[in-house]
Every structure is written in structure tokens, then in C-alpha cells.
Image (cartoon, rainbow, N blue to C red; front, side, top):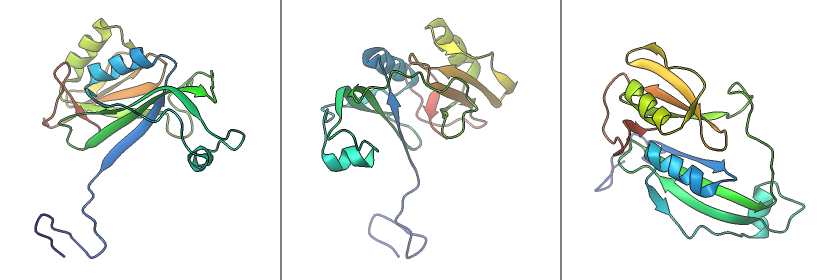
Length: 179
């Protein structure tokens, strides 16, 4: 099946290659947003709705609350990434959960996100100098290295070195998006 702009591989193919999107809950919205900007998530879509409908609250498993309320929210995008990478950065007001994020990166379920870089050692040194908290030094051989770090709230992020250079790195780091 073909359209003037798209070529599909089958009748059921809608042409979607990939979209990576996740949520980070934070107690320090401004600090975490600045940290994400250092990683390359430099485009923000503001005017995030701070409250929503009963249906949306129920979709988020909030049956005791009619609505939720956010203190701040923004969709952060990574311009020039090889795929669409986005973060909903949210600071909850109600319901508020003060529990820290996962204590260890081997938690059952989604415990971290991976960001690809074309120069792991360069980005490790830069982010460490800017105060990023790393769990260890980078591990692996050139072109196949990785390292874990935490954002300002303690959420795990994995930097992984791409074996082949890619386009789309940010101005500050060599991060090119998510694999």
C-alpha cells in the first residue's frame, strides 16, 4: 500500500517506526528540567494541564481522588534524535507520594531509561564535572560501554555508547537519543 508521502510494508503497517515516551515524577521540577536539558532534552512544550478529568484520574489508578493536581508539568523533547524521544516531567501536588525512586537499578519493572551517546567517556567526564551522580566508572570496551547515573531525584539513567556514530547529538553532550 502506498500514499504520496509514505510507503507501507503491509496492509496493517501504519508507518510507525518508534516513539519513546516516559514520565519522570520529580520533587524538584526546575532542577530536574535543567538536568534533562543538559542531556539534550532542550525543547519544551509548556502549558501542560495541571488538572484533568475524572476519566484521566481513573486511567492513572486514582480512584480515591476525583482529579489530580500538578504543581508543574512540561513535555521535554530531544530535537534531532534518531527517533522521537520525549519525557513528561511532572511535579505532583495531589496525590503526592514522597517515596524515593527505586533503591537499585535491578528493580522488577521499568527501573531506568537508556540514552545513546557517541562518546561515553567525554559525556561521563562532562556530566560528572557538572555534578551528575554516577554509580561507577564506565564499563566495557570502546564502542560497547555503558554507565549508570541518577537524576536529581535519584531516578536511574543509563548512558550507552553507540558502536556507530549517529546524527542528532545535543549542543552540550554527544547524546543522540534513545536506542
